Image (cartoon, rainbow, N blue to C red):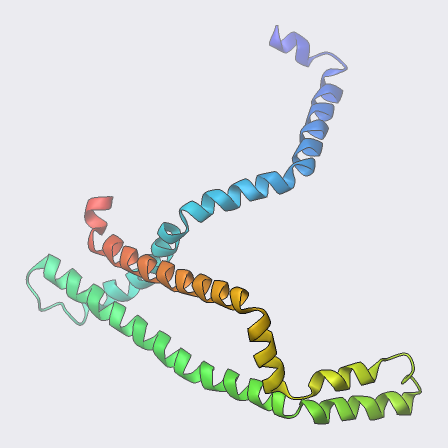
Length: 195
């Protein structure tokens, strides 16, 4: 029966139409599908992140197990020492990177804010030279530069709830990373029993 239907002239057109309808429904409901996938991944994000961290630490721990701690007779102690050393090295690398990046970013932001008036004056003179000063509302931009500390203080006073909420989200993210890191250590420590 199935072969008889497949041999009909209309069969390929019907399959193409069904695929087109399915593709159309997929496109119409794409937002719902991506939201569902994002929600599903959100539930397991910490575990996924822990697995990724364990995947990154594993080669370093294996290298240390076979080179640095090869004299340790107990296999479990050898592996646990290797994991500990790999974690310490990873934390040191992250700390060094943060130590290098944070001052650079801070200096860049401070320099941008301190030179803002000069940048705006350059923009103003350039618009006058090009004859576009009427089209670009440079005076509104000049008013924006003003006293940056006062503007930040006013912003914080008006948006205190948003600042607190953002701080809470930052704390939540840091906690997720810490839990993921602990999970990765657990995954590596119990790697043989997980298999």
